[in-house]
Amino acid sequence: MHPLGFSTLGCPGEPLDQVLSLAKGNNIAGLELRTADDEFTHLGLTTAERRELRTRIEDAGLEILAVNSYVKLCAVEDQPLEAHLELAADLGARGVRVFPGDDPEDAGDDTDASHGPSAGEIRALDRVTSAPKDSRILLETHDSHSAGRKMARLCRLLDAEAPGHNAKVIWDSAHTWSHGETPAEAFDLLKPWIDFIQIKDEDSTQGYRPVPIGAGDYPIADLLQTLEGTDYWLSLEWELKWHPHLPPLAEALPTTLTWLS
Image (cartoon, rainbow, N blue to C red; front, side, top):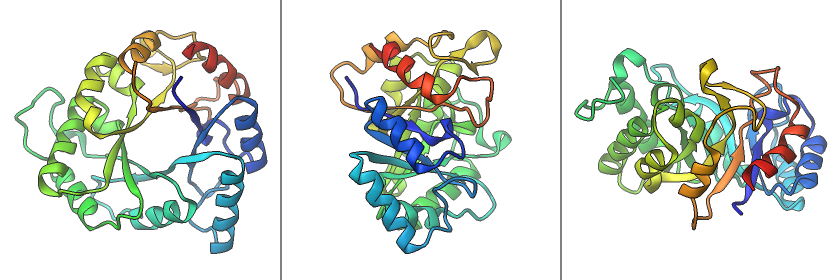
């Protein structure tokens, strides 16, 4: 069984006590910490508050998979990447989740393998090159680079131009699937860079809208078969913050354990 985590996106605004209780009651081993002003994880935490948060999570036997920022690595605007990397280092997190956030018109077509790097991808390269390496930069397959083939192209650019960089990939397996890639195809594309894998269920007949676990048609059996023999972390990205029609995380977690088994 792969170690399982969840994102606090699934329990928006809930205090740390509630998050730790959910984890303990569902055999959860890791957390993605949504980082925003309305959460207990945010950039304004003092040194003492960071130390306390880290201690409480470690004492609960949990690993912080990522500090989930809303940094857009390819964006024109300045991004608070270094501040998030510092927070991740202070909390002992594996890294900082970032979005690609490239301009779709600039980024080129997913299927065009000959397309050179976009201006946004060059900005991403510059940011990765100049960023401190105390924590990883974790690029999620999302928005402009939801497809595994597009993310793999960006990662190859980083490998070629910034050897020894500290960027890895969070494989949002539903996003690559929604872009026409089977779990096996996406895994083959992203395998050299995967740090951990996000899971959720979606209804492909409703524009890949997140739905209760087991109610959609995400091919979870295919994903698990693809990952057989590996020990990647799986993390439930329960998007209750953005999709209030979903059941609460307290219901989704035990259902997810059944879904995975």
